[in-house]
Image 1 (tube, rainbow, N blue to C red):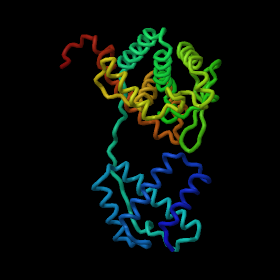
Image 2 (image 1 turned 120 degrees about the vertical axis):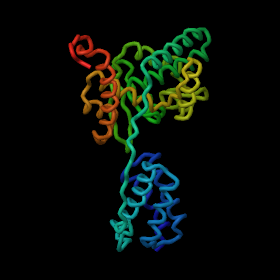
Image 3 (image 1 turned 135 degrees about the vertical axis):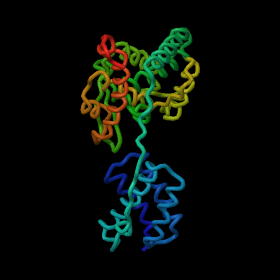
Image 4 (image 1 turned 30 degrees about the vertical axis):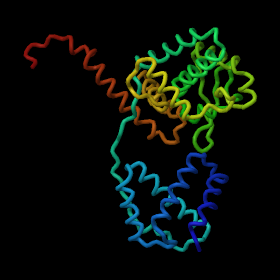
Length: 307
């Protein structure tokens, strides 16, 4: 039996039975094709698989290697469940990872403020020019949404017009694996901005079904959002490279710094495991350390004999 030919059947299973999103399916497809192209065997032994894993370690970072191996393991588990495989070759392979812990990059509050101030100023400048005004309203609304909700860039790009209640500010977000969650917009000025943008682009939004649309009336893509943020950051005089995901990191970190419970942040972000959310505690703790160094009352005390 040619197991490589079973990958299409497996990907259909992932799409329709497990309801995995398009990005995950694409990653699975790439990982499996890469594996079979390298192995060149339908029944690889332990030595061939070990060699492939070594090759992965030469090319990729630990996080990517871990995902690629998990993709292959899941495929073989599927073949076992379908009784197409007598023995899973990966059961003889022991893989250990020593991943380096990389803290998420956040945007300083001052730079977020600077970016938004520039964008609002530009919106006012273009009030008499309908085309430019609509574009500025859309771009500013996207930045505000990223920071107000902590949503992922593809969640913002794919948000449907009927997922946003412009009266109450309740946003329905479709996350990974088709999991829905609700996030509340609480700032009145952001709601006003969203309403103004909607009114300026109502026909295009209604026709496309997407809330954020480009000049051709199509969905405003993830890459377009990345390019837009890069452009405005440069125009605002910010030298730091800012990505959409950094707004998500900043959102979570600043909420925890301000005392919001980590389990609540987990629900807002749509994390399946609280362990994923807890990484933001480390960043918040670092900030607390900096504050203690400058604000702790012990620093103002005169202690005789202290070094």
